[in-house]
Each structure stands twice: as C-alpha cells, then as structure tokens.
Length: 412
Length: 123
Image (cartoon, rainbow over all chains, first blue to last red; front, side, top):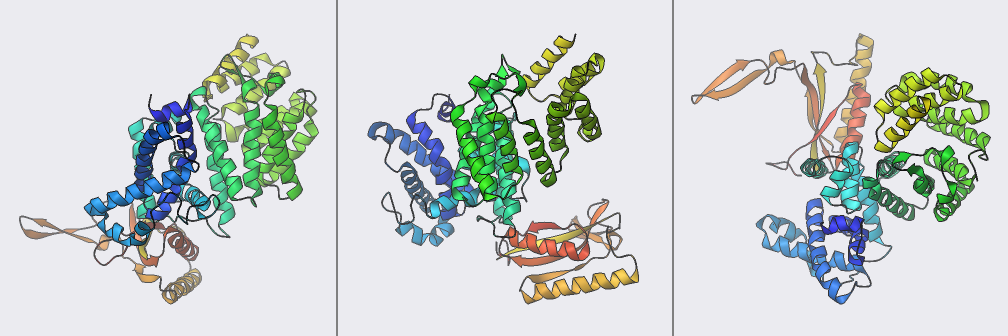
C-alpha cells in the first residue's frame, strides 16, 4: 500500500496532514512559479523530506507553511541545477532571496495564501476545459489525491488518467488559462461550474464503498470554498446539500442494496451533520437569495427534519420543487417533483406527470424505477415489472442493481 | 502578451449563419468593420481576413530536391478555414472575450488557438 492509499484507510497523523495541506501548498507554489508540474513535483519532494523529519521531530505548528517553504527552496535548487530552468530562475531572483526561514512575510493563515486555492479551483474548473478534466484536476491539485487514486475513482487505468491530467495541464499552460478568481459579470457562471464539479465529485463518491473518499474530499473542498467566498450563498447551499445527504449515508444501503428514503432507519442518520446542514439552510433563508443548490439543500432539510416518512411535510417539499423547477427547469428536477407529488395526490397523478417527462429521460434508470414504483402501488404488476426491468438494465451502480433485483423478486 | 488565432470554418463551402440578402450583407459588413476598429484601437488586432475557398489552394512540397506543386488543399476535408484573426491578448480569458465578440458579429462558431512562443511570437 502506498502512503497515499493508506491515507484513505488508516491515515497516520502525518499522512492526514499531507492530505490537508497539499492543495494549499500546490496552489501557493503555482502562484510563485507559474508552473503546475513544477509545483506538484516540489510539493511531493517536500512531503518526502517531511515524512522523515516529522516522524522523528513531530509535526510542526504550521505544517502548511513548512511544506510551502521546503517545496519552494527545493524548486529553486532544482531550477538552479537544470539548464532548462535557467531562464525561469533568473526571473525568480527576487523569490530566491526571500526564501529563508519557515514563515516569510507572504505566508499567513488568511492572506494571499488562502486566495491561492480559490484561484486554483477556478483554473481547474475553467470552461475551456472538459468536465472530466475539471474533476481530475480538482481532485489531483486541490484534493491532493494521487493519480492512481483519481484513476480508480473514475474506473480508468492509471496511465489513462495520467494522460488526461497531462493533456489538461498542457492546455492550461499553452492557452494561458488564467490563475485568478473571475470578476463580475463572469463570476456567477464560473462559480456555478466550480460548485457543479464539487457536487459531481460528491455524487461519484456515492456510487460505491471504494469511492467514499471522494465524498469527504468534496465536502472538505466545499467547506474551504464557503470560507473563501462567504458572500456566495450558493456555495453555502452546496455545503448544506452535501452535509444533509451525507448524514443519511449510514442508512442508505443495507447488505449492498440501496434503501429508499421511505424504508431507511432514521436512527442511523447522523444528527450532528443534520444540525449543521439545518443551520446553514436557515442562514441561507435569512439571506433571501435562493439558488438551485440552496433550494435542493432546503428540500433535503425538510426530509431530515421528519421523524418518519409519513410525517414528512410533503406540501413544503412540492412547493420547494416548484421553486427549484422555476430556476432549474430540467427533466431530472421534474422527475423528483413528480415523486414528491405521489405522496400528496397519489401514484396515479404522479404517473401522469412521469409519463410526460419520460421521453426526455428514457436512458435514465431512475425514471423507470419511479414509474415501476407508481405502477406497483396502483396494482399494475406487469407494467411495474417491465419498468423495473428497464431500470435494472440501465442502473449505474451495484447498490441500485441489487435494489431493483429485490423489487423484481417481490413482484414475482 | 500572447497571440491567439481565432479561426472560422466553412463546412462544404458554406458558412452557416452567413448573410443571405444584400441588406443582411450590409449589416454584417458594418458589424465586422466596427469590431475590427475596436480591435485596432485596443492594440488587439494583429492581422486577419477572409480566405478564398480550398479550390483556390495549392500545396507546395519537395520531391527529389525539386519543388512539387499540387492543385488543391493540404487536407481533403468537408471543413476548411474560411477566415481568421490573429490577436494579442493577455491570457485565454481575454482571448475568449474577443472570440465572443467575433461570434456576435459573424454569427458563426470560432476556434481559439494559442500560438507557440517561437520566432517573433511571445508566449
């Protein structure tokens, strides 16, 4: 097991610190040297030095500062030695002369260093790059995952992921994708792209136990984003949405099969996370600037507030879905709204709505699973079976396939 | 300062969204002239223009030490560059902003490609 892999399992103190400071250190080194690969290599070298020294001397009080200083000095040494770096090294004269000591003037907890991570996440999620590049770069550079860990999370080989990262970094450098926080009027759209990438990372983490680390990484990055952009309610909304979803994870599967909200053991829900999620949602409501992530968080907050499925405030849920659909009119939102409608108006009304959106979502397993559920409640067994079979054929994860197999068994 | 190529493609000789009537052509020319004046005034414009079609192209190669001429374009494809701008821009965001203005003016997609730092071109 490599140290990076161990960090996801029984992480030692040193490895946990590496994971926490990696994104900060890489971001700061990129600002200093303007080169992503150089920054990654230098931080990696600093971790090698640290894993020796910290195990004997203990973890220093400002581990991120220690890593940045060590990595910067290493990078400058490497540049001095290599012919290729001579030009760059000359430009860095000023940096080289200020690189003594563990805590130089530009290192601080809140100052420009925090902004480095913010700049980097906007670079990683730039719209000129593909979504698969956004995700891979964010996890590698800000999350500090190894190439192999990123590769395994997305079921591609390590060489394929390495190639994807090289390609993305090449484009950033060649096309000069800027390393800065976008300004108005671009900021809202660019922030949406960042938030979507974090949510995609989180949701990928729900696909199976081997991907669980992606969820904690997404939550950690969302938390950092909220700290960095406290005036952006959608960032807070995303964090709350993730917390409230995460609170239910212990009840979400049983023996490898998905358990529906209706059947979950609510005693297994994580109350601490629910309280934090609720607090964020309440703060969002007070601000009165609702957006898609805040509304989705509010819907989850209502679910988490109910002692039982039956006690859920369904009219409130449907009202929130109506609001969500008005700002995000996608078929998937319509699907979730229809499922909520079933709890007020019955399965037949829900099925009518589902059938109107089904053509748009024919390759999405959840529409067929929802239709199957409604048809079964209406006593239409054959039609329900056909719908569940179609859902099982399209299902993306093992837990969902097992759940759908259970539904088919019960119908047989 | 970097330089970027903003290129527009014709598919089978057609530029989708191109002006059809003389009146549309007049409005199109006005938009392009205004855009180029803005590029010029801000120091963005390096060079640009519309190209004749691939039937007007000649490929020059070398065989046995002699120059060899071949009628036609280098790549036999449905798509060919119809025109381009070369612009100065600080970074990709600045280049993309100009590309957006070109798209608005010509009503056709634009490919943005950075120049390598070779010869006279800065990166």
